[in-house]
Amino acid sequence: MTTERRTIGLWVYLLVGVVFGTVITKSEVISWFRIQEMFRFQGFHMFGIFATALPTAILTVQAMKRRSARTIHGERIVVAGKNWGSGIRYVAGGIIFGLGWALVGACPGPLFALLGSGVSVMPVVLTSALAGTWVYGLLRSALPH
Amino acid sequence: MRNFLTAPWPWYVAGPLLGLFAPLLLWLGNRSFGVSSNLRHMCAAIYPRNLAHFRYDWRQEGSWNLMFVAGIVLGGFVAGALFRNPDPVAISAATRDAVAALGIQDQSGLVPQELFGWASLATLRGWLLLVGGGVLVGFGTAYAGGCTSGHGITGVSDLQPASFVALVSFFVGGLIGTFILLPLILSVGAGT
Image 1 (cartoon, each protein chain N blue to C red):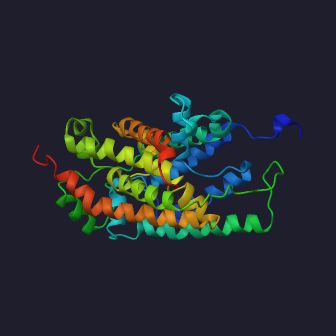
Image 2 (cartoon, one colour):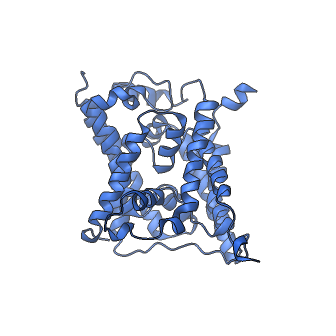
Image 3 (tube, rainbow over the protein chains, first blue to last red):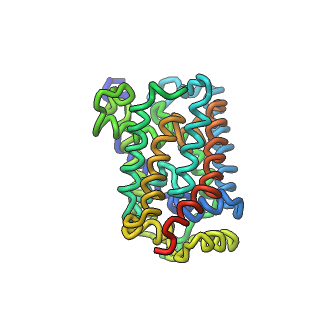
């Protein structure tokens, strides 16, 4: 195998992204109304999605790990681990993200899908999200992790 | 045919499909499925300044993911604009009432027009919601090291304790946001 063939073309990821964007849009995961329904525990839709997506992901990824599966290029599949540290970042960062998730009714994936679907103010929300990430980069060394 | 293309998809179709992106991206080249990393890549590309967090080879690490995100935008266009569902999102009657009680009457689109239109940015509550919410999403996902996809699906699929904790924390934040912060923000200048 030559080095040029070691990675598949970037357009493949574009294609996978199109499918992902289509699924989250068509299933209304990107809808502010659906997120409200979820956080208010007033409908099954979002929970049904979690309850089927998570087992699917767990079973397939665990099966790949147990069988020492390889990528299409023949490399061993490894999942990059998350550093536990003190754990504070997962609780504090998680809660802060959750607050924003409830307000804009979208997590990062849906923000991009909503941009594509033509919601006019999405560039403003995305720029704000970039600003938030940038501020984290600025404060990182001062925050507990 | 048209109706088939514009109709929304039920949870039992979307859920299993969404669970397949983590294994698919691993299989295609050991890529960890996660969208919020792209916010970091974009900061690194646009304005890294001298911040250690943004000084890395974002092209090497992030090109595949930025392409993935470009795909999400395209997918959103195809599914949300080209084959847009003309009907309102079929949320429960209880949620319709709850949202209406917050002052949101137009429930016709994927997102409430009253909050996501340009006019909204001329109001304080619009700013707090869209800009404040956006900043919280960007800061929180960066601090937590992942979002609903990176922690919620990839990390959980790898059975990582950190991701289970993160996922529960996302939900705790979401509940505080829904029941305390959102009503507070929407009451600001509600009369205007």
